[in-house]
Length: 71
Image (cartoon, rainbow, N blue to C red; front, side, top):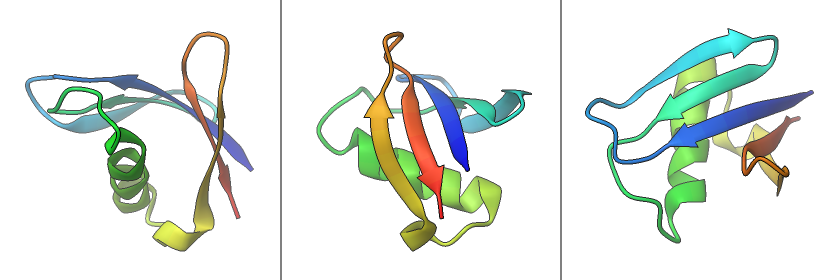
């Protein structure tokens, strides 16, 4: 299963909202850097209740959203 995540960095509060089937917006409290992908995976793992090893990054689409595959 694939999920799409729109990441909004430097937000006031960290949270995740679902806005469609398999589509989420992640508000993160830090600026985008080289560790952003790993932190986003951890936040998704906690929110979805899925072990971290089952969440794999696939790519970024044309709108710069993150695409993950859940194994």
